[in-house]
Image (cartoon, rainbow, N blue to C red; front, side, top):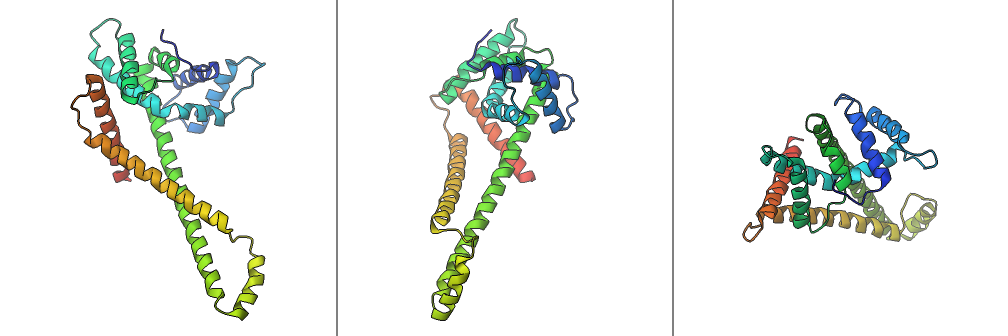
Length: 253
């Protein structure tokens, strides 16, 4: 069996997730699902060890999402091409590991968890659809949260700018300045200049991150396949498909 560097806790989490996902309906409430995962996880952890909370379990599971989605997609595509062969699971798995490394220049971190998942009898009909749907939901939640944070940051920056402009206007009249000065001292909601610049910098950083993400997507969509290995070409096609899927979802919303 291929071995990875995952912790025992992460493997116990994977076993608990498999147990619950194999015995519940896909439409089950997400909160109920993770409560059951927490219960199943606790049974695999020695009493002397500290158990992870539901939030910790979800955080660890979500951390695997980007790499696991790409790896599972590679494995599935290769497996379908090898269905007529005998040891197709192992061959497809090893091919996916090599292709992932060649395309990302990084080793796939969750080898043991992925091997545990794909060798379950319920993998194709139950676990894989559940896994991919759950990861997609997590991705949408992250995007929604990011948009909300960006909107809130924009509102705060706008409010700070408005307040700063108002302060400049008050300086034009000595009487008004003296009067407003006392009110300013009692105004705890007005951010300092340092806080104002910090919020502006944070907004710029988020905008820059979005620009870089769009630039990366553009590079992927326009990258030439000349000189690429067959594995790298297949991974490039996969990434283009994922980008198009995200764009279609945004258009629908």
